[in-house]
Length: 136
Image (cartoon, rainbow, N blue to C red):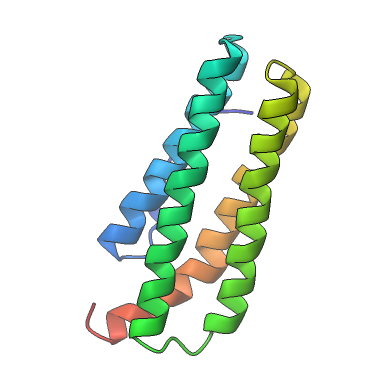
């Protein structure tokens, strides 16, 4: 996996959400670097746990915005959040069971990176547009 770099094309124009997306990307990059460097399992586990916790908080933030501003597409968006939670848990399971298995961690990280890029551009961007219309 190559380093996942933030691009303006990922922006949803809501600074709080953009910063959270950047942090999730940073955790994915840390996980990738740790895997490449054959970092000890405990460190990889810590990165994976941090990613899971941060992602959980991020999703809750978006969900509060959707509820507070009565986002009309929230049902579909929430389904995607459920899928994201499943994917980050899969990474954690892979780390827990195969801490230094580069292939398994790489596969899970690439899957999550691809899904996140798609989700930001296809699902979070419309949320950001809606929130801006609501004055956020």
